[in-house]
Image (cartoon, rainbow, N blue to C red; front, side, top):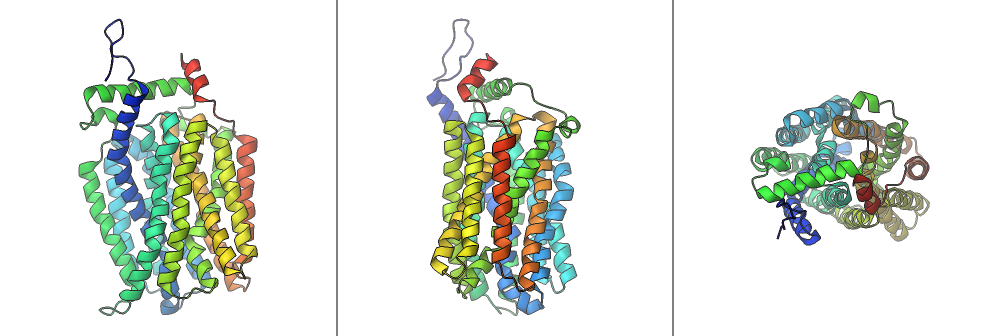
Amino acid sequence: MTTLNTRGARAVPPKTEADRIYSKISWRLIPFLCVLWVLAWLDRVNIGFAKLQMLNDLHFSEAVYGLGAGIFFLGYFLFEVPSNILLDRIGARKTIARITIGWGIVSILMLFTTTPTQFYVLRFLLGVFEAGFYPGIILYLTYWYPSERRSRAFGLFMSASAIAGIIGGPLAGIIMTSLNDFHGMRGWQWLFLIEGIPSVLAGLVTLAYLTDKPSQAKWLSEDERAFVQRELQRDAAACGPREHSFLASLRKPKLWALVAIFFCIIAANSTLTFWAPSIVRDMGVSDSLHVGLLIGVAYIFGACGMVSNGYFADKTGKNTLHVAGAALLGASAMAATAMLAHQPVLAFIALTLAVMGTMSAIPVFWQLPNLYVSGAAAAAGVAMINSFANLAGFGAPYAMGVLKDAGGGLSSGLLAVAMIEAFGALLVLLLIRPQKPLGSQLKTAQ
């Protein structure tokens, strides 16, 4: 129960009451946002499974696939910052609904692909429509959670990409195997259709369900809304002075250091996302369903890693160490995957650890921008970091395809990307100041 202080004003609820309020917020927001991210992730990466049939049917080379997989991130890069600025102005509900409906429609249109040009255009448009979703949710969660609760919230939300991997692999395998040539459509065409329709429907639901900010949350009591507002104000004071102007933040070297760090992490994550099915197939697994099931196993560990790394980062406050440590695990395991290519069991264990380490670095990374920017600078800065860094998502898959077409296999590409991810971990340790423990933050705010 909320108590009164000596002047009759409402005091800050005890910790158990605060936990209850944030649990209520989390149960309201996180599961729904996770569903949206699962749908986004499925529509973004199902091309990795469609490739197993699509390349032969359409006579595409590995380089064509790699370019098409990566060109998504060019559309993402060009439209991400405008999308996040729009979210800050018109609200998350309208922005996220627009994004979700748009990417669902484009995903459905992918089933009509017959030429490389059509493939490139649709993948580019998928990136255009999805641009702003991921950084938009990162920004949106900062409207609800103070710093010491964000890593866990980020981890829970971002674990949806791992959940998508868990269910997406087996689902893709089942669709492509059981519906292949059904009613004259190939399995990969059914995959795009079946996974695109739910996104359109979810976008319509978003308009009715999502709440932009705590002050508008009718599902919270007046006291609960006031408490959340005080927590956010206390957190802003505890973080000290930060840049509020986006244009001024562009002159800060730390912001560009964050771009470089996330670029290195995304290079690894995109490589694993778009090439893991091919890596598993090269281990000797030919059946699409079995490939999907094994990818699902790897992403179970990815989900566990994201949630647990976010949880312990919140507990210890040592965000930089948790980012760097997870990235080093991912880099080491990716290198091991390349070197153990002829030992399938060990290679798969290494691949699973690579997925777990790389994905675990991502939610905690998003605590780092809050050390330097806030307000409008945070809205555009988070989008800028994500958009520039995701250019790695364009380059890495394409480079892997070129290397494979050249007869070099996947091992050389995996080793190169592992070195890039390890460099990102080193940048975290060298360039990013550790966050102060929560106790000292509160003392500063007082």
